Amino acid sequence: MEETYSAFNQAQREFDKVAEMMKLDPSYREVLREPVRSLLVNVPVRMDSGTIKTFPGYRVQHNTACGPAKGGVRFSTDVTLDEVQALAMWMTWKCSLAGIPFGGGKGGINVDVHDLSEGELERLSRRYFSEIQSIVGPEKDIPAPDMNTDARIMAWFMDTYSMNTGNTTLGVVTGKPLELGGSLGRDAATGRGVEISALNILGKKGVDPKKARVVIQGFGNVGAWAAKLLHDDGCKIIGLSDVYGAVYNPKGLNPYDAVERAMKPEDSVSKLLPGDKITNDELLALECEVLAPCALQNQLTGKNAAKVRAKIIVEGANGPTTPEADQDFFERRITVAPDFLANAGGVIVSYFEWVQGLAFFFWTEREVNNKLATLMNQNIDKVYALAEEKNISMRDAAYVFAIKRVADAVRLRGIYP
Image 1 (cartoon, rainbow, N blue to C red):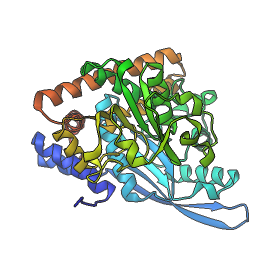
Image 2: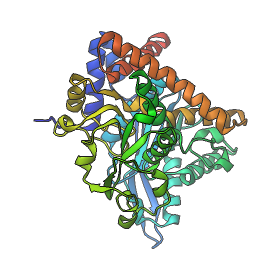
Image 3: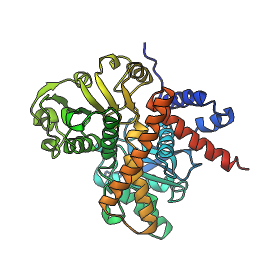
Image 4: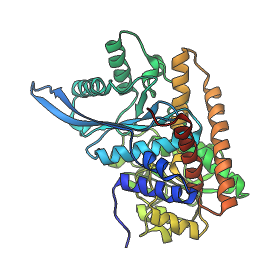
């Protein structure tokens, strides 16, 4: 029977497993198991009706030994302190593994954005950022978009901070509109990271991309970009899904035929693209070279892992694979590129945006994409090599690199005072 546990319990469990494998000093384990700072705020908003409604909000900084905290802000009724703490911890390892000078942070508000008018959404966003401003800033903590937040909300965040401090501060958030210091290539960055990861590992397996069958679960920003880019590389996209359904076509699907859609049931990829309409479970069980879960957490579990027939799994979503499924895949020699390696394209280009914002000097999209590919390929190469050398999973190998860098930073900086 598969164990149930909270997101933060899962994050700590993954850390404990690798810390034990590394024989990490117990003192540093204790420091790294918990967030350095968790801020809980109540966000009052004047609604269009004239009434005032209060929403719970959070900002968590897991670790800042390697640099300012970095992580998104999500608006969802599923947001809890437990979830935000887990996501902040995972961001620490993602930034560390990527080799960028950030620690891990995350934030969120428990709210259904579909119930808000545009004015209410703006007032909520601005008040939340004012409430957390005491711990954020371009040298302290740099938020970014996440679930149900976007470039427009980042613009409100940046403007709120700038109005409160009296100067325009481009580096306080990333994922901004291009007109306000955003980076070219940012929209595609996470999906491009999935593409880079898939191509790199296919190459290591000796598989020609033009002979690779690819299945992508989730057709949001990450999944859609990954599908388009892998299609451009010559891969055959045989399965796609979104929240409304899934489609399978062994002859191949053209993701470009579904990119402009309003996300209604009648606009699902399962309706727009030619092929067999299948369930999500059937999609995950398709025989393929690459399976990229780019939707939600806990999609590959102990209940369905045995049915997975992919040779390579590239995690575009955060936490799509449970530990039980991970163990099954390792035993069956299915290579899993873990989320904090494979979907790091977004935070890497966010780092590029932050650097550009601090310098007020901006790069071309080609420069951004080339820098992203260079950094990601270096990270994939070292993780894959360690996994092969030690006969461990790529996830465990990635954790070894990520945890060691942060633990070394804590040790070298020392404990103040």
